[in-house]
Image (cartoon, rainbow, N blue to C red; front, side):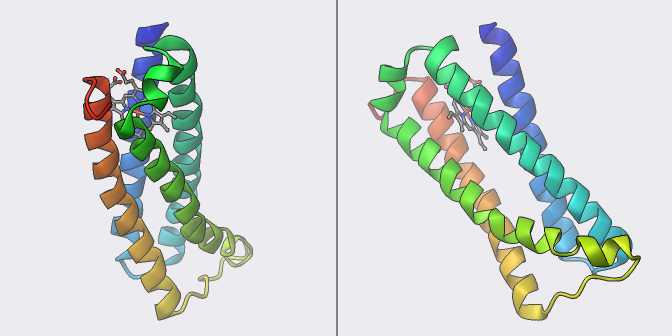
Length: 148
Ligand code: HEM
């Protein structure tokens, strides 16, 4: 089970990073109806992989790996978890933007997004990818028993 959950953790993490990278590429392209549909679908995959990562990660903390005391006394884990929650909250901005496009896209119209909102969405996705680098550093440190 430990191996299965480590595997699921990796699958969810790779799906999350792939979705974010695709979103970053698409939000820098001209917004077409096809791209708007793609962004909405990819964002759903991103949400599902973040949810899976959270559930699997917490199961690893409480059931399958060292023990909760180990992780909650690890600065690396606390930073990793904190950054994850901060990024999840930040990702609400692009998600709410994409969800607001549903009606227009269903009707076959191009969603309406002004330059300022688009810049914010781009900045948040950039920030999320940068945050993932911090999470990866913390994951490596905490797994090897550092920053305790
Ligand atoms: C974007 C989010 C995340 C990424 C990219 C990520 C990545 C990683 C990586 C690369 C490892 C080391 C390999 C392994 O042991 O499987 C790892 C381990 C681990 N992660 Fe995550 N993780 C993320 C989110 C989370 C969350 C939200 C939790 C818990 C709430 C969590 C809990 C753990 C635990 C318990 C381990 C095992 C560490 C050990 O061997 O002692 N991860 N993670």
